[in-house]
Image 1 (cartoon, one colour):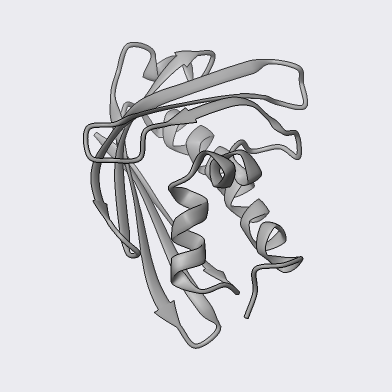
Image 2: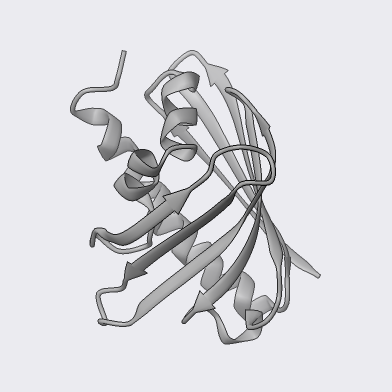
Amino acid sequence: MKSLTLVREIRARQSIVFEALSSVEGLTSWWGPDDLPVLCASADIRVGGEFRVRFRRTDGREHECAGEFLEIRAPELIVISWRWTHGGDPDERDRTSYVEFRLRPIAQGTELTLVHRDLASGASVRSHRGGWAGALSKLPRVFAASHTE
């Protein structure tokens, strides 16, 4: 199995970044690789709770992912299962992979480390790396207006 790791520095407190990763309002503000809004999202943020996020890409295609919260340790860790329920990477159809968000306070705010593991192929790693990079690039903009300290 393959995995990818992305690290980003975000100019916001760890607890604020955690909230963006663990609330429906937060997820809809940054999820998806393109600068388009999330179409719908739901999340039962507790261990065993489920999430679902549907978004549209700039090419007009819709994608939906879903999974379960496997571990939550506020404000430093969220682990979820991940599967495509609509669209997504063809190599990942009918498969489950896992995403870990680790948050660590740093002088400038928060260091976010995203690890997506158990991906099927190198092509899937490249596809997911691009998607996550696009989504994570939205986070600084989410906090720029009103959440930085």
